[in-house]
Image 1 (cartoon, rainbow, N blue to C red):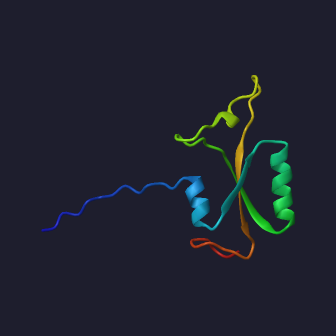
Image 2 (cartoon, helix red, strand yellow):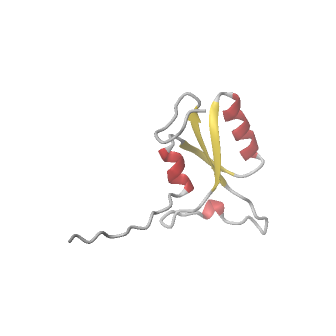
Length: 92
């Protein structure tokens, strides 16, 4: 009799989920530029997703440190063409 192993489903990170759905990361930015960039990408016809920026363990990250006590929320801006639906996405 063959023994079947049970595998735990690994949850995808928001970053990998967006890439799977056909999005590309365009920039990492904080307000007030974040709102301006999102509005401009939408104005020219892109779908836009924004997620909180996570510094990769092997990267520098000094640019994202707190500036003189003022906490800034950096976000990654992902975009895809409205016509380009990635694999795994459903048409609206």
